[in-house]
Image 1 (tube, helix red, strand yellow):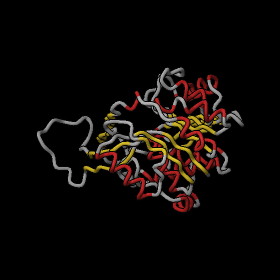
Image 2 (cartoon, helix red, strand yellow):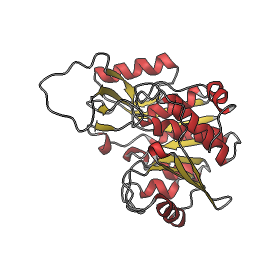
Image 3 (cartoon, helix red, strand yellow):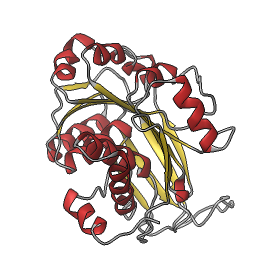
Length: 304
């Protein structure tokens, strides 16, 4: 499957803390509890989809600094082309994530986007990549707004994750929700029960699949073809190290299995397993399992 993925890449630092809330102390020594790696939604999805065997074209905007060189080196290392990586920023975005170890998976994210939200992307240069793709993953960042109608006019499946919203008609994310065929979001700031918000979304937009991630409670999702709401518990295989990137993993695996012929329910079961295996590792862009690893768990795991 040919993926066109456009979204954020940044340098991410993860800090393992004792617990939330963080008490004050002048210094701590979390041995092997601080890691720095390449991450960002667009990057994470690209790496996860590539790990599952897909052909990836990745588009993003980076800076002209040392962090940018680190990102380019990583892309070269994992075999993702830098053809549509534009160095239009003075400084590359960075993030810091505080995370609490254990099954609860609470984390607090600080994402410094620099001035990326003021930037636009060269639509003429990426049109060919969009036209040759089977699926377009357009992350909810400003420079992707101009790509939404291009992908829609080309008849491509559009997938996006709007993450945390509290309004069905959220002004920042409305463009993305209106164009999406596969729409993901989190339950973290919903004003009503997930079932009600899901119903409101399916009435407001035309997406074929709408998924609300419920964290440790699993997922709830709507399938328009059957006019059905499904709910799955989390895949509890244990060994949680850090839940950062779990949503990106779930999103990517679902789109992979669903667009490769699985039913929505079977695709989501496999996606749950993919995410459960991923969070055994620290770093949003690390730890994605292979299709065979997912299948090995799937063959012996029963969802209740």
